[in-house]
Structures are given as structure tokens and as C-alpha cells.
Image (cartoon, rainbow, N blue to C red; front, side, top):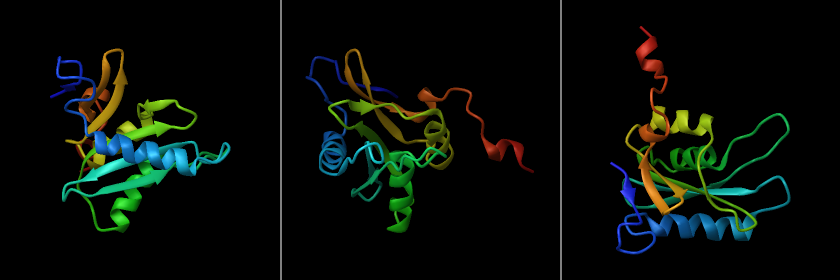
Length: 141
């Protein structure tokens, strides 16, 4: 189910504002040149928040969402319930790329992803961002 933040209760209602604020603080404090330009914050089922920064490299590199997933696993948090990415330079909340959508869908099929819409921020189930997703479990014996 999508959490609409434009329901008359005010901007951001239903969206985990603490996550948005954590990612925003991190990107403002730690963005550096072209190497680290996006921060992500993820909510663990136990309630904590784990953050990460992207690692840009011309050969590819992990997006902030993937770094946050790895950081969560490194702390023993294997169940994430929500995630958001925020860009540097005032770009605000950014949607996950296709690769991140697929990884989020595979690891956390029930996770909600905070995205910016024309009506404000919304918490959207990852399956809505990646309909008809490939599922490796469906194709492996």
C-alpha cells in the first residue's frame, strides 16, 4: 500500500521523516566532489537507522542504498522496513536506480521506499517501483 503524503494531513505525513532527515544530514556533512554524492538511510525492523554513502567510480560502484544494506548486515540487521536516498547539492529525495530496485525487491520484498512525487514525498512498496520483477528464486531449481 502506498502512503500518500498529500492527504490533507500535511507534507510528509506517513513518510518516515527521521529517515529523510538522517540521509539529508549525512549527505550535507559527507558529500565530497563526484566520489560521494548520495546518502541513504534505512530503517531496521528493530527500529534503528543505518546509513551509507554511494561510492562513485567510472567502473561502477555501489549506490548509497546498497552501501546502507551492507552496513545494516555488518551490524546484524537483516530486516529493513524502509529506505530513502538523498542527493547532494539540494537535490533532495531521489528514487532508486533499476539495480537498487531489483536488489531491494530480492532482499526485502516488503520494504517501503520513500520517493518524491509531484504531490510530495510518498512511501511506496518496492513492488510498485518494480512491477513484474525478476525473482531469481522463481528460476532456480
